[in-house]
Length: 220
Image (cartoon, rainbow, N blue to C red; front, side, top):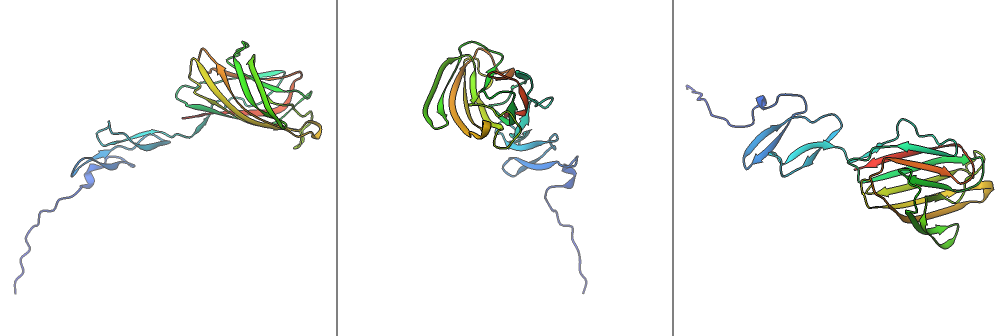
């Protein structure tokens, strides 16, 4: 018995569609495919209907440390210069801060000393702590004067819409324990601004920072 083999026409996606490591296949229409070139390092794949493949590579939406050059607090005040373009809010962490005297820690944006800050919250059990037309935004109710876990001030601060030129919302939670007197405060407030954030200053109420760090992250 003789067997004959006839060529059969096959269709499919050919391997020659790929040009580089990381290239992927994406549909451009029904039953139609195309190569999407690999993206840049640290980018992620996102849907975008304006693109031919409906996909694009874009920067990750994670947090980026903006004051990587320096995080340390020192002297009576410390200013951190940052760039906020492209970020929807700032997440700030204040870590293990103590100072020469027990007093509050305040924050100023762009060095603004005008009466443009307001906040309302609770401090050490006080049900209503309202401060309006302030020349700075109060972060802590005090600071310890030695490096101990029960003394050090710590805080989490959020500044929303840092590119605004009219008003920014601020929210924070903080604790400190000078001389073992544990104090907690939390508040929401506003800053009446005229420009996007370019710097953030932390100011001690009456003394100097002995130690501590501030980490300012931009979030997209």
